[in-house]
Length: 444
Image 1 (cartoon, one colour):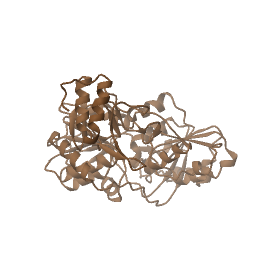
Image 2 (cartoon, helix red, strand yellow; image 1 turned 135 degrees about the horizontal axis):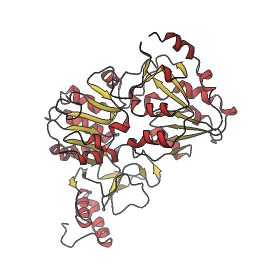
Image 3 (spheres, helix red, strand yellow; image 1 turned 90 degrees about the vertical axis):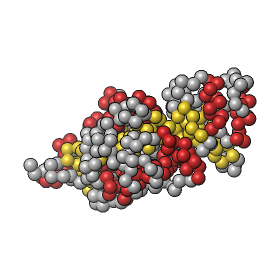
Image 4 (cartoon, helix red, strand yellow; image 1 turned 180 degrees about the horizontal axis):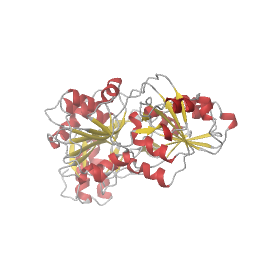
C-alpha cells in the first residue's frame, strides 16, 4: 500500500498540531531523544491561553520550553519519571515534580491508571509500510501512544531505526498529526573516562563474571566505566540484556567481547529498551539486526531477565547503611535520578541461574564544603531507599566486594564496615554497637 496520501493529510505545522491541547489536559512527551522539541516550543507559545496543563516526561536533556516559559507554574506543570541532570535542577527549583516508579511497571501505570489526552513523540521517518520507528526511546513510547486520545509524531531524520523486538514502531493509522522537524542532532551523553577508583572497583567485580555471561549496565558513569574496563579484559562471548544501551556496550562490541552467541534468551541478539550515548553508538544500533528493542515492561520484567543464565547486573548507587539498605536516587529528600530499573535487575539477576547483581559506589565523596564524607552510613536519615535490605546482593567499593545475601544484621554490619574508607571505620563500628548490630568478636 501507498501511505503518502494519508501522510500528507496528517502533516501540519507544530503550531497547528499543538492547537489540539486544551486547558487541564495531560500531555505526555517521550524519553531522551524522543523529546518532541518543536512541539514543546510551539506549546510554550500558547502559554497565555492555557491553564493547568500537566506534562509528563523523563530523562530529557532540556531545555523544556513549557517549563522555562512559565516561572510560576500557572500554565504548565512538569512531571518526570526519572531525572536527567537538567530535570534534577528543575526539581531543585520546584519547577518539576518526580513520579516514583519501577520501569517494568510503566506500561501498567499507563494502561490501568493514567490519563493521556495528547501524546507527543519524536520518531524516525515513516517507512514504506506506514510505520514510524520509535528509536532509542522505544522502551517507553508505545505504552504512552496506546493510552493517548490524540497522537502527534514529530519526525526527526537523525533518529536511528532500532529493530524489534516488540513495540518498536507505531503505524500511521494510529497517528493523528505529523510534524516534520528535519534533521535535528541527537543528544549525546558521554561518560567520563574511568577513574582510579572505578578501576579498583572493577577488579573486585571481574572475578564474578564468566565467559558467556549476559551483562546489564545501569545508568551513570560508574557502570558505563565498568563496561569500558570489561572491553579491556580477557572475557569472551558476553551478551547484552539491558534497560539502557550506552557506549559501554559499544566498547565491548568493538573489542570483540560482546557477541551474544551464548545467551540463553535471544541468542545472537542484544536486547535493549533505551539507547543513549555518542553519535557512534547511534550509528551502531541503526538498523542493526544483531540488536532487538523491546518495551521496558518486557526488558525489565524479572521473570524475563532471569531467563538469561549467568545474568550479571551492574548498577551504581549513592550510599548504603549498615543494615544493607541501598540509596541510589536521592540525597536526603533531594531527588537525584530515580528508581528506574535498578530494583528490576537486582531482582531478575538474583533469580537467574548463575546470576549476580552488583551495586557499586566509591567509599567516599567530597561535599560542597570540601569535607570528605563516607558513603557507608550507620543508618539512613531521610534518603529514599531504592533497593531494600531484603534484596541487596553484592555491594562493591574500592575496598572490596561483599555478598549480603542471607547475612544477619551483625554480619552485614561487619561486611559493610570493611567496604568503608579506613578513616570512617571506627565511628561506624561505634554506631553499629549503639544500634546493637555488632558482635565483640567482629573483626575490627
